[in-house]
Image (cartoon, rainbow, N blue to C red; front, side, top):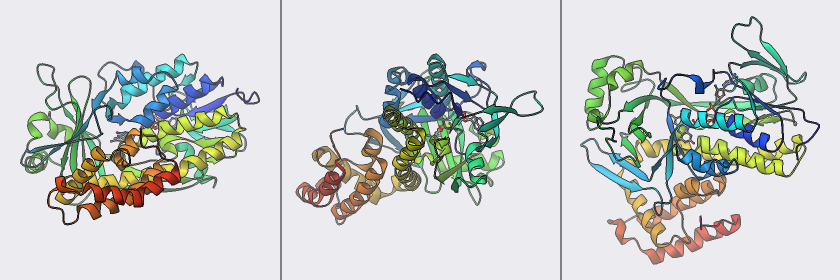
Length: 461
Ligand SMILES: Cc1cc2nc3c(=O)[nH]c(=O)nc-3n(C[C@H](O)[C@H](O)[C@H](O)COP(=O)(O)OP(=O)(O)OC[C@H]3O[C@@H](n4cnc5c(N)ncnc54)[C@H](O)[C@@H]3O)c2cc1C
């Protein structure tokens, strides 16, 4: 039952996390009002603008279960069952993600997902005000100021309880920092990113295997592609922002063409007008945001990217934001006063979001460089053999993060131990197929099983 002394909860930001959180609150009987900077994306003309696509995994989907919309969201996705690596000379190498086909990721357009979630929120009775950009907040007087079109002065709104879901640059977090309620550390990567389209074939089909994440690893830069429902793939190129072979050095059509012909020759026939797109599409920035704490006693709380911006290399940032919503919902179930609820939420989530932020940074190196490194590939193969043969006592960090709800911090700690174990088993091994499984079992039982026991981890996920 909602706390009846709370008249209304204000949510800033109608991105995916804001929509899911608002809908969960509405389902529990709260009056929820969402303020969103942008115009209603559902009203724009069809085909107006493409969006990044992202992968949903188990943690994100289980939050959607609470709203009864898992299957409807899955209908908007393309399953992704493994990685397809493209070498410079056009060789393909495929690595399945999970122990079987049931363990897969789901590629979805972020805008399509967001539009669906806006509908779900509206259906649950959430009031949404578009074109309301938060520009100021007074946490003592408990009001928020929003810039709205055609008004000279910001509109002031009383807000008892405010939840900030306004994304990584979060205006609400900035105000909390200015007022010394929160400290933040924002670490930008040297890499930026740009979207490029792999168009649908003339007959409407996919021009590459649709159920794979395509990746062209080239060390300090890489290209990847994820399928959309319409036969196209959204490509993303990650490159340094400055220096040679960077977004700043590749500024004219000739240098872009040379760069692609040198590094991505087999992508050119399946890309569209990549030179024009490279020159005209905006370059996105990538960063990790660590803030502490995420709340002011029972009055203001940050959730999703607003609390913890994470680089996209583990495909988890939104999944982590949806998991925030599920944890928040569990705490609502306990019917706690909001000051305790916010405190408990922060204490639970902070170590986990720090862990996934670190693992995502580590994966940046894996995706750009290691996936083409023979030693890394050998260890991956050894790990896959162990997982297939000894799956009841060993699951990889990747599978634990993507296909279970074991806390991120536990996956991180166990993963560190797994790295040592794989190094021990792979050293002096010429052929991964020759890995000594008896020794592997012994090492797992000595070093990993005690950790699984300590954290009560169930590997049957
Ligand atoms: C290239 C790339 C690839 C990614 N791939 C994946 C992936 O595969 N898997 C995954 O899980 N995640 C992925 N992510 C991350 C994912 O997109 C984000 O984690 C997710 O969008 C965060 O959701 P959010 O609702 O917290 O914030 P956002 O999506 O940023 O939404 C914030 C909302 O708040 C609104 N807003 C902003 N400022 C204000 C203001 N002042 N007033 C009012 N409203 C405001 C914005 O307009 C927006 O609607 C990727 C990100 C990038 C950049």
